[in-house]
Length: 176
Image 1 (cartoon, rainbow, N blue to C red):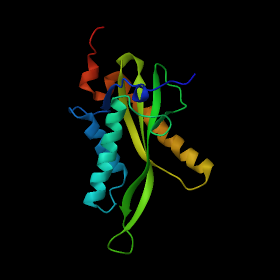
Image 2 (image 1 turned 30 degrees about the vertical axis):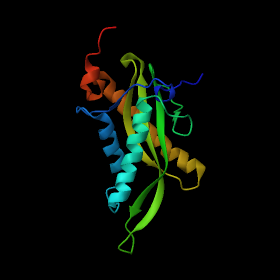
Image 3 (image 1 turned 90 degrees about the vertical axis):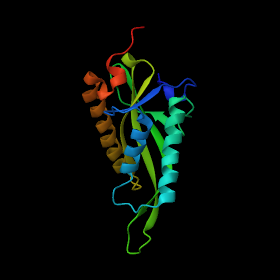
Image 4 (image 1 turned 180 degrees about the horizontal axis):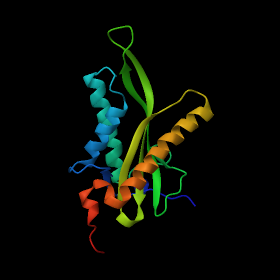
């Protein structure tokens, strides 16, 4: 049986970025996504603003339960006791990579952000890890690389669970 995410159930949930103690977790996740695009990329203010807008839009839609499966997100086929793991998907995010010209080379990448929905924290989505998806065209290689990235998300989930990922709002859940 496939688990349906809060991100697409029409109700949504509180979104948190792991180990972020500030108030705006969507901004923290957006910053992580921007960093994932690469520190060596050439900064184009219009492209940077467009990408940030795409990230914020998808994260807010997820927190409102407005995403579509599998276009925007999908379950990850890994077992976590007491939780479900999902990936948010961005297709065609542009970045400019330095090359022999002063303008660089624009390339389009696939970006993924993994999040968990731990049962013990109610309607909560915990952002865990993001990466640029490797697409060399060799399916086995690409799958192996993505599985390594999923493992990083699982490790973050497991390591952070005992301390509620450093998220103050989750450390003392209200009694229900």
